[in-house]
Length: 452
Ligand SMILES: *Cc1c(COP(=O)(O)O)cnc(C)c1O
Image (tube, rainbow, N blue to C red):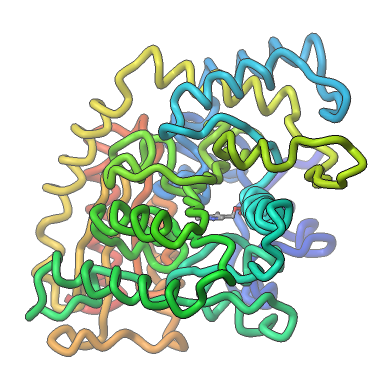
């Protein structure tokens, strides 16, 4: 038998696969990396190279690859039941998970509706909100309000309420017409304005939009605190608190998409805890299973659930479903993930790690091609620019991010920049040394690609 190598697998892969978010022609130059095994923060390929997964495999992994507890929980569940439909049937893992989620969720969220990926959880949230108003006889409410530079997934509904041109523009003719309001992005704040004033301006803009569209809006949907796919752009927690108040004033739903920022990522269990602000509907996925299996949940308040609860003949039921809704294996993984949060003070441990990330990245601010170093808990992002004083970005054609990605891989770190933004969003099991290592590699790559 011939040995399995990176090159051999890559050849076979490129004959039959079509990879996500990829111009496949890039792989004429760019090697694809087949991973044989993962342990903790490390991934190992078939040639024996190791890579530190500094982005938690697209933000899903919380407690490291191969986490023994989650792995054992899935194995236990596998001995009894792999799957059963969730209509007319139920099972202990999904019940226990729903009880556990309601117990830790922001106040008021009492019902769990499951799907199997984040975009679907967003679709559920949008349909649920629209249908709620319809069940109330409010048929003029058909619009959704979203922030500039937001991201909520790739299916058509989720894409409609996002605002990242790279993913959206091509499909524009197919999409719902969302109403986009400027985000209170701290990076865009003029130095002459205080953070409070900047938030206030954006709160006023939101208020005006909702006033102009009174009776037409179902919900406002936002990513609390960090717009991750939009380049890890961050904003002040007080915006969330004020947004909550405006949504109450105008009687529209507030949807928090915590798919990327939930589960302790920003320093609190939910990013919205920092407002504090509680949504009417909340979407979770990514870290929900600790990064082991696909699962998503849309939580809502009891009065939303009740608006669908009636005799069948009224046709008010929410007839949305996915085949793998509430999969027992995924629920077992999610339950164990929440058990880890219960048994260990993850948030306190992360505070220590986040401080190390802060101090180990401080030097980057002085770099001639770094315009901003920003952080919320376990997300640290560096904004690269061609010209610092004018904050002039590198043109996208320069593909600076791709060059950094390649340079970092050669040094054993998986960074996958978003355009000109390099970030680390590591599994919570990363050590102090590995944080230093990652930021050291990040610095070397910036020097190599941008010049020092
Ligand atoms: C990743 C992400 C989604 C989409 O989740 P998928 O599982 O990739 O469909 C939605 N919203 C946010 C904020 C995300 O980061």
